[in-house]
Image (cartoon, rainbow, N blue to C red; front, side, top):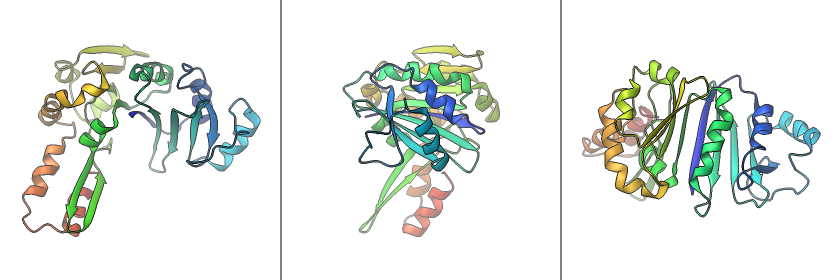
Length: 246
């Protein structure tokens, strides 16, 4: 599975964003809307604009969109802390390059940051799993855009605003990119670090080192070191450490 997420500051024009998503290539073009995973009501079609607007009034904090074949999906989330996310999930048998028209289609809404990668690369960079006794702990980490840039991935979309916020120089990232393209008003940069999403493991050490070496970019190495330094770690100490790196 490939995950592609764009992060936006609020206010966020959800209705127009959804309308623009319907202009994407057929394989990922959303067709149905629903509040929850599971059964998708056949009558909930985006072409019924009146019904969608009524639905959105009751689901303004988030909802799901599915392609006509229900193989790809979007998760639209409006958070109460000033951020909105649009996440596309693509099955492995579809081309990962389908994320490029998504990024280019929504760049007019000034995303702060974006990523696209194999789900396992995302877990490697931004999830931390730890077993304490019979308890399996699983935490998200490094995703607070006010504290750091979350990481570098197969595709990374980054705005000048976020680079300036964390005093990161674009040239420090370009040294490792395969392709770099300026989008929109040229203040948003789409970076590609390797050829295919499934190549992430053979590139992980290179990007791990890049994240660690550039101040302002989150590196899971810091979290791993903090945990390794506690000899008698328990769930409370582990939770306290992870809370610092959310």
